[in-house]
Length: 182
Image 1: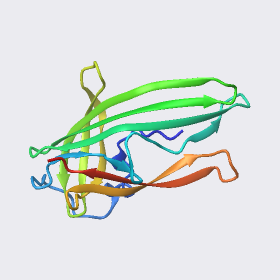
Image 2: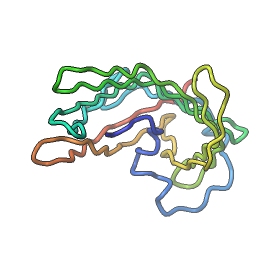
Image 3: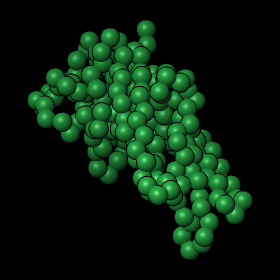
């Protein structure tokens, strides 16, 4: 099932980091700051994504998974470090009547950032979960953000959702807006 608990930036503009561009070499202090997600498709947070569905292995039950996003923030420090904070929840319902509430997930990615002519490259080297010490990632996780424009980061993400209908995958566009905080 789709899992939003990956940095949403990785979804924005189809992984901007993969586009042809000059290799970023330095952070740009002009775009340093905190960017907080305020709307998805024009709707304020919390925002519930389109549900995914799939057959439960070994049964005839269908599981419907819904994820709700409560917070999604990027802090780009002038030093070249970044923090990405997100809070979401997940709920799964099955046709047999059971419900699995996963509760809220909260975590912080940290690492370095660099700017090129087309995007901001984020290189995460650690993750922190509530009540736990930061854990180094076994391998850095690199993803990209669109460059801020007009004091906001915005973009469109295409997310593939599982569906049991005649077309098993449904692609949905989501428009994200992260204004820069004063």
